Length: 265
Image 1 (cartoon, one colour):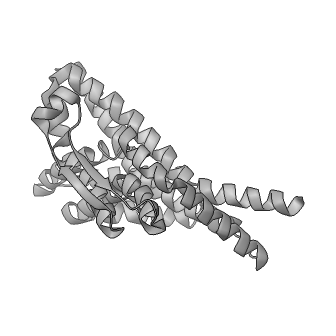
Image 2: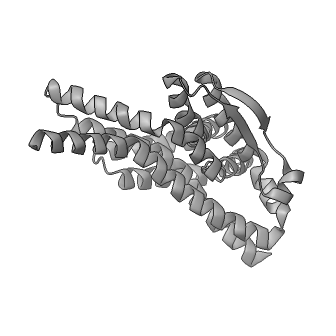
Image 3: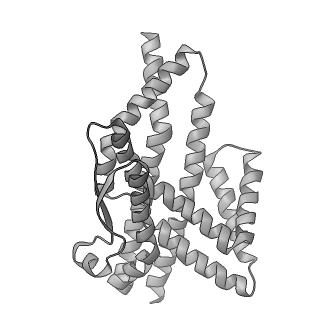
């Protein structure tokens, strides 16, 4: 009985360290996005939402599309950005796909295609910071490296990253300020549209059971060979939290800026 409980506990831990972290950040980013869009709608109407989605929505849908292509899912329809029709139904973009229900690979792909905007959006944000404001990237990455030598707490590391970013951004001068403002707009647009819609979650649900089974297999194998995976799972959760926390931090920044704009305008 003790072995069974250990197996179940390890399986649950592995599932929470991966899927649980993705779901938690997807929910938090979604809540911040809804709050920000309400503020923008009240201040600028539908155009305010369109301006923020100009880059973020295509990046979101491209994430779905790439996930589909990698796992061989058949894309049936795609709209990267539909600002006019979206005003009626509230949908700025979408990707429709079908999959072979008998294929384990494609069912697994449903999960990754569903959550792809979180992962792809994070990669795009880091790439934008690196390309447009390398000095800000060096400041933030240096702060993260320093923090990681002292702690593994994701919140403290995220705070260090935010501090490094702000210091780097504050050091910009001349044309660097223009680059910084452009980078900030693009990043905020991407971060505000990283969240997962109900359609995304429904699509991903087809592969969740397989992820759970994979976690169970992982637990069984590591228990048989007597490997302690607690540190590895904690590190996995910390890395995912740090990466996805990038989008969440910018969502918080967007919400704050949106609130200020509603007070100004």
